[in-house]
Image (cartoon, rainbow, N blue to C red):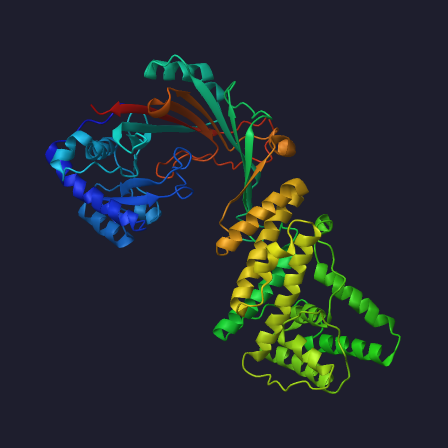
Length: 596
């Protein structure tokens, strides 16, 4: 793509205030969209946010597109113009809308003029300040099927603007006919002719799905758990080359709690009940889940108290022993495939056993009140002397400690007090479970976990931090169970999770990254098809470096142009080598213009 033709100085003078005004809003942290001119708007895309742009550009950019009309506006316009044969905003009101390639070139022209130091005389005479890169969505209707046009200033070390780099992205496909793909030599020849390059380098990139989202059986909800691996290597040998073992590889891990495939799904259900109680404490309304016990909560608590009373009276009863074993087994409640990772705790105290029984059987506020009434009566009468862990901070634990000395304070089981008491013992129990897991597997020390198990915060914040701990557990356990990662990789992954969650709120959309040796995951990708495969051809150095990229992707490379999508959906993690995969093609070309 050659540089866009220049606009007149008058046009430039009109564009500059509008563009600068948007830039000032961006510097204040606003992301738009900002009205630009006529039917256009400008959005700010940061790294990781531009799904359609991230394959071609990783930095912060300004994106120009057509405004997305509301349904009622679009219908009104349709009535005024019978030429509307397709109502895009009715079909997908959130879809970004492209502009024509000619209009995109005009926009890049104005952007270029704004940065030309020679034109500073038409402004305030101050040095030109570089704007973020500009990308314009194109509709792909031109002969080259252009989907993006982009531009960025070329700057010296002193931030002086010396020229502009222009980028053009063209797309086609999908097709499974590999004979239609250009050879590597053809791409090199095209780059050499375009840029008159004598020395060229090639760099490869490939992304594989290792663990992809799939619809949960008998449910309309789709899991968002997804693990991919990125490979980067120098010296590409051929199109669709399998990444060599010398590649730099990085796992991208996004895990959503509540996935039925997760080995720690039972632990998630326990956390979920904790979250229900926390929400009830906050709002005063508790949405009680369905019980999973046949006996009532009061019956189960009475059985637990009878067991303790019998022990105190010296009665030898084998039934309570079996019941205690059942409680311990229920608290582990994890899939056998992960038993080696999460070890069953054998040191449950009275409050923890009580939590295990009540969380599965209480179905109302009155159930909670009745259960705690039974317990407090037994404590006051000295019928039981339960054992509890040292350092337990719950209200019930403090009452039990007081009962040892016969001076238990009176407490009213009214209002939100019973909910708070149940939440407290659940929090205590789950904190110890997570400590047991992370420290037991030597993935973290107590000092590293102290932030997450602190009792100095209010209950809501404590719940929030325990929720972070669970997400970290989901990430680590999934990588251990499905990718068979061992301690040498799980330890740095855990440290990365701990660091992130000490500084950020709970966020299951966050993608954790882990550098890893290709040989560790070789069996997962070497017989699979890449989700994305790309080659970069580079020549020149420093400011004069230019590159051509050619990419294959199993998914549409842009989200604002329609493609004929195949009816058959292919699981990229399970594909055999003999199966032909339809790929979309995209080529990214670069050219430069240097100011005089």
